Length: 138
Length: 136
Image (cartoon, rainbow over all chains, first blue to last red; front, side):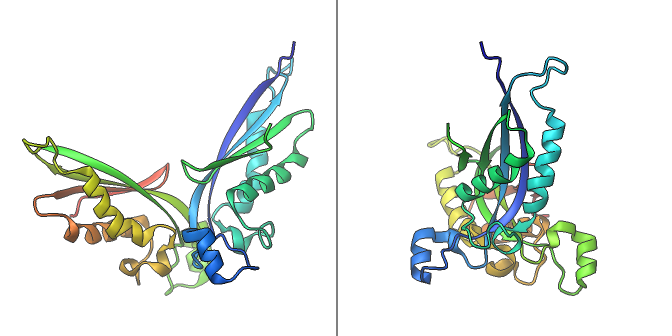
């Protein structure tokens, strides 16, 4: 029987962004993205939950050292996005609309190479206390 | 006397940056909050009024009506906006939550019906940082 356990680490970052499709005219952007299209940006307290699934190590009792996971998330994600303008200050969203959906996929792709593939990785991102996304879905 | 609180929220961008200082001075005082390209928050605003419950309704004041007043005169001006660039009552001021909570108070008071006394505003910038203002 599988002894797999999921462990989670929560981190947060505060950032500005706007939703805009440069291929569309102003009116279309305003209609589709509404207030989120404000050319002067708006912002959020993003909350990030990183989930790793694996078997507890018999020697430590840990699935994964959560301090190590925290350091990896800070170094890979938080240092990159915290107190930044996602559209203006990051290479990841130069040509990609920084919706919560796109941000969560970017975060997963940045973290995945840092973590041994024997662990399943899943990322949940809260844009507000009421709007959140998850990747991958399974 | 009973205190009644209505919570509202808005999402906005801002930066802490004093235009009379050099970039180095701003970075030294405000750190990451001085990022020239802005950052942002989910702000939460608690509006507390005080009074005695009306004998007919049991209400100090109808919180649904209070919510409509806050939304019309405060949230509409702040939600999905850039606090430094888009908000008339913050023009020329430093966009700290200290100044913002005072600005919101001054914005709200003239629109409250007679007899509704504003007691306190609490403005939360992050789960770990908030300001309170009692109008004095």
